[in-house]
Image 1 (tube, rainbow, N blue to C red):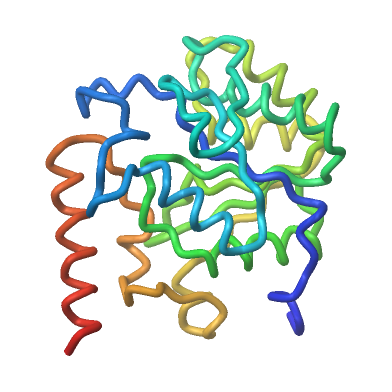
Image 2 (image 1 turned 90 degrees about the horizontal axis):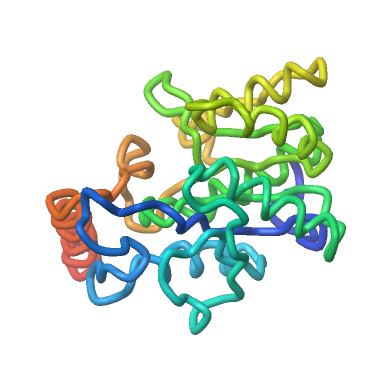
Length: 229
């Protein structure tokens, strides 16, 4: 895809999903410090580095000092409701064609993957674009076409439906399929890479517990030490 890194960003709205209960962490994950910075800063910086001005969707704590916050209309109904709320607000105020969602608990995602996903979505015009690693599709990051909102709202009413299942069902409701990009192939072809040199399997690490926080901190510390060698 020649010139895909130079595409304009006006057609994409970006959101950090930060409305989880953080029950396994014991405190709000968005404000937990990882290598000296609140985790929410990692997601905001990554989105900012690809030219997007993100908002925070469904915050549990007061995060207005970090970015604009979109209050979740039904905070106890999970991230899918937060996604619908963000999509609805974006349609009403900005008119962007796509919405990119990243989770606050995935601080190791590289910007190059988000760039490629945006370029791919513009070309294929798929309703949902996701990534996969080791053969498993990842729920986030997710790039969602704005006109999928009505179908997603229908799925959001189903009790117990997770985001991935809802994405797939909403696309099928419109007679479409999701696009799932195999990250290993993108790495092999040189389209995406990690600034810390991490293998693709570690990009999607979810930091939900103190133990996972320690593992992520160790990876960052090791990459910084390697950079000095």
